Length: 317
Length: 312
Image 1 (cartoon, chains in turn red, purple):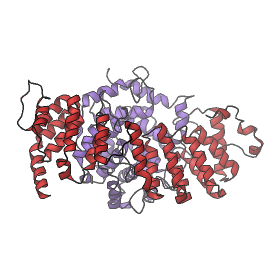
Image 2 (cartoon, helix red, strand yellow):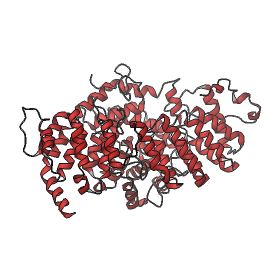
Image 3 (tube, rainbow over the protein chains, first blue to last red):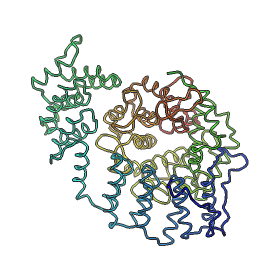
Image 4 (cartoon, rainbow over the protein chains, first blue to last red):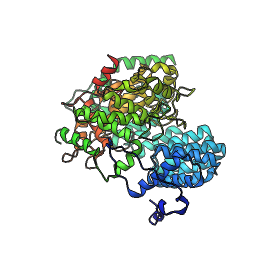
């Protein structure tokens, strides 16, 4: 709550509300889930119900919904009523953006808040694009992965525009994260990110995703196998490196001797080496990632057909 | 780790109904019907639903219905698809779906489908694959899937599929285990799982298991008991649940119990709540923990309840 809400005057003592009789929540004589409300919250909701039932779309009702939302930002009905009032009063929606920003600074994970924000931005149209992008940026300062803010940003870009600067912004964010300011292309960028923090699943997935529609370049680009090898020399049990190598091999990649030696060194001496490097990798994965042992067994079992299909596909291209 | 404190959890849920002076209850007022669904389903899985008087619950649920046919989160609240599904599920638990004006409810749901096949949550138009799931699950339970354009609904969900095999809330949005459950559940109900790359998605989902045995919802995030539902049910629906370590997950959920007062929390030693108690117990049911009723991974209702609806 705000510090200025400490000396909040109860609604019953405010002259502008003297003409309204609050309507208490009717929980019935035998409520299913009886609820005990805080006094102030209960009073506010009593007045909200009264204006809602009277369908009073006034400035004081608008102010009242703000108070109710400060108590509990999760109430759909109050938000919806607020939008009806905003429409009826033809209110300045820039003020509304400020209202939401203030709330978001305290609770940026509330669904209704983001939906409301989108409603306001949609009404304002393309002029809102810049401010909306700035708004999400502010959220990312404290919570770089906030799911609502990313969804909102996607929506703004798709609906209101602003894509032209987006790549630069994403670079900026990623660079903040991995302490580097060079301008890389995407593959070397992903490689750099992996080497900085090999245990981060996201950068491995990103690298793999870059080749989604081009299997031949995935298999031919030595940078992919090189990054796996580099990581494995310092972090022998890195599941992401091993699984990426496995993807390479099952798509027809042919390893050089250095890589073969490195992988063979990973398997304990007690276990038999297989002449097929992909089989050896699966065996290593079964050991270093026991939680997913069944997944790796399944990969091993499906290897033959995968490799055949992979080689066939490479020839086609 | 102990065993599942089933009696304590049932007692905890029943007590939530009677508790006073509780912040959680105040904040739950607007989604009380969701809370009732979580609590009642947990009780049913534990075999304790008869401890609740349905003569009180059913009229209260019906009092949350709006003239449009949709349900609000409580009496006097505006209708929304999220609450409408909970209302239908509660009535299903008590075998009382017949008290509904089925045509009216299904008209309300169908009216929220958009031209591109997506669903809005209510008249205000927020669009999200969560609402696709909720609408499709509701209509299926009412035997009224014919009221919407199923083909377009499927197409919209597929348009939210990402390169990693997962799904987000709208096209282009990041994969998230909760949204994946919604999309996979909806596709399962509509018989359209063949559009899913099960091996690719299965790999993403089984990567959610972290060292403690718990599941997270996105890469690099902390584990949380609620993903024992979102991730696990999805893995079951695409037939890849054997790719995770089930024993370790059982242990993680059991470690999140308050064995003295009952209830389950998001992570070990945190405060318990009804939401996580439901997801913990439902997760254990999916893991075939002894003594629990089986739960259906797509409809999020006990299997005997689902059978009563579809095999009658």
